[in-house]
Length: 615
Image (tube, rainbow, N blue to C red; front, side, top):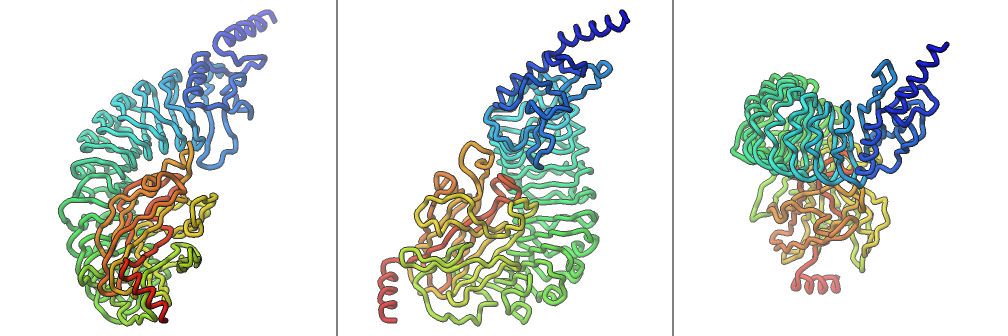
């Protein structure tokens, strides 16, 4: 009995020294130095819900703010401990996950006070500052800092964390060159660097990352070409590089990445080159090679050994020739985009007549003028401008060749994504059609629209939001009816008017960002960037609504003068791979437009008044 009493006293004595959380319970406890580290970490992050009178490692307790037992997916909130030390009497913090909490602080170097820490996940907050180099001594397996306001370079000391498997830095404001020391992390499986401002070449040491399974580098300011050593990444399953700054051509060594399920490369400058030899990649589900200056004919191998393929996008390249007969095997591909090339010959009958409801887009090509291209759409197939040519900077569209204008108009007014409205006596046409093949003809008003692309990994709410967005916030601008809805596009959106009286006009494009949020929240950190073309010419590069308007929910009207000589006007908005794609949700990117008003210059305005008075 005396022996048992002494044991209990000895344990209580040790417990009081090791941790302030012993109380009357003889449970596993956290060392005092880790408690103090947590206190500083909470203050630095400005995490205000941690209650230090409660044991952070008591998994049986639902109080204290140390863990949410039933979190919404994507908003996990938990401090996790391993309490197996010293025969179950001592705990150590192994994981801190604080996602989607809009924390306002900065990254604490005091994480080093948690020597057993394996995971730091602070995704989708509002943290600023830089990544502490002190973290380089920790046995971390996962660092996720996605969707914050972090700046500065990646510390080279991160390259000392040999245990690190996942390093996620997307959607921040980090800059500088990529440290060559990151190539020492041979256990690395995931490296996500998209939507920062990294510069310089990809270090040659990255060729040693042979266990890499997922690499994302989009929307940066890198230089050099896509390195040939990516062929060493034989475990790679996903590679995403939209507008990374790297140049082409795509190295042929990519053909050896036989485990690839997703390859997305777009907006790649550099010399022309053929589609890379991917015939041995049978696990591919998503293949996007858009605006990569691909030349030559469509490779026949894409019609073979691709039974798992769901998305194929080879749009906006320089591909020519006919569609290969082997492509009949692609009839079950959910989304097939061959838009914006120089393809010719006849559109195959199987595309028009023998499909199972899948989306095909052949717009902006040079196919034969025949019965398969005389209509601008067929079920879920978009054929707008699939047979087309340019005359004096004006687009000639074969499928609209027989269109007869009911009247000619001194202007054009569209409420993009919204119902018909009258603003100051001017009627804005409705634009609410939102079904595949995303071609709409406003017959009575003399215009059509064509929308190319699908939002891959779309997690927007409500589900299936499509290409129209309705604002859920109160709008305080003048004429809010024009901005309560907006038309969206994942890749390319065209409005084409055919019945405008020749003369000088001002094309007024109305924008207001209604998907991002204002204030000190991660939802304000998204960056929407796209290009504006008028009559086939690039007029505005890297247009950012929020920057131009001075904030979210504010109006900016971009005015571009144009002279119309044949009654036709083409307005096209195009996503060129820049900006964030997952803030506030996956699928928030690409062109957004609220309204179009094309108004006549002085001479045409007078003629319009006279015409209307006499009609």
